[in-house]
Image 1 (cartoon, rainbow, N blue to C red):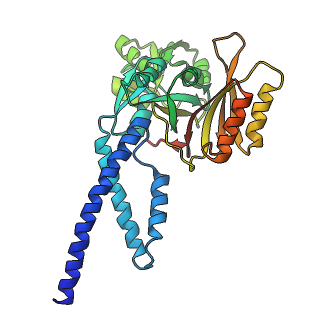
Image 2 (tube, helix red, strand yellow):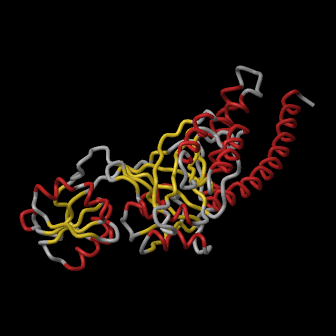
Image 3 (cartoon, rainbow, N blue to C red):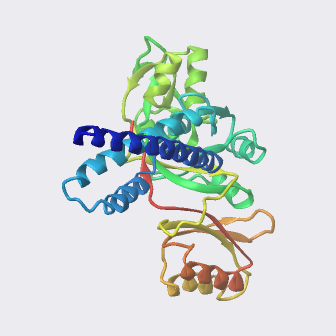
Length: 364
């Protein structure tokens, strides 16, 4: 047998082994896809892929071959993602509003292979996941200009779902009217209260009468149906395209960096991951002197940085509040578990809403 024949025989043998290993790998990918569907996680996990490339490339001692192996494993992961995308095509993603709402835009960008499912309000979208009608819900939790979406935070506190990721969507509000209308004809603007707040100065400058709607896209749909040139909506460009409206003026936000934070909620919690660098925490304290201070100090004394602390009435007992905290650090470490144990001794109730590695920007 010649050296060439022997080399080809080795390649054939390795290819057979690689085919078997490929099938094993893709069977494992099915499990990964199911895990992501149950927890409302996107297919791409860039930090995980970077870690795999770094770890596996170190196994190749030959400096000449290592760059080619990096290409090889990168291509493997692209194939894996393509397979996961196909498996997740039936994933049902709940959001509040109608097509064109910012939540709808966020849902489609986080889960491009999923099926977005519209609900009339935050509660029904949230409860659809609790009931098993949808796999996850994409809901706004905060806007950089208008503040917290308190209805969603209340649902998160009282509900059973877990938060599995935070995503930022830049919000650009636009004035939309019926075809052929002009700004000079507009006397009233309709939109979600958050959008009205974001454009308050613009509304005052033009002496428009604001009117609230369930969300921005519902407002746009209403304007399109009524076909009244004196009434305009404040909503996204995508919404204008959906409902055949004319863009009367773009970018009417008071802030040019207006961003909404969206959280993904699912029935199942993420597996404990010591790479997660942030967590959301809910707690209540007894109405006794020093109790809140003890809870706050416990977080700092354990070495965690509390980025934000907010309070909301529990609505169950008058003048009783729950607190939500965003904390930097990993709650799944021994230090984190010790913190939770300490808080349980101090507080009336403690609930970790969810953990995540980093906040991701949603691109258009």
